[in-house]
Length: 80
Image (cartoon, rainbow, N blue to C red; front, side, top):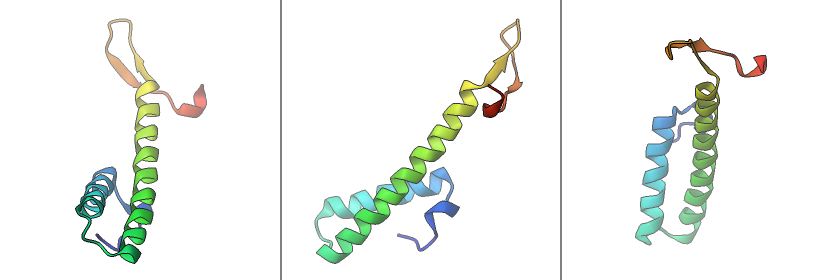
């Protein structure tokens, strides 16, 4: 587990750390206090990953396509 703030992590960094947290919790070899801290960190990582995925999905959903079916760019989400 790193000390890097979750908000500064890329999706890939956060998902990798979340996998490590889950692995440690699944092992059952972590003391109760450490388990609670790991669980809290895991919850924060999960929320961060979900937000990153939602942002990516919104960008993909706004992708515009030409008459020939070729991508022409993206439309900002607030452009409706």
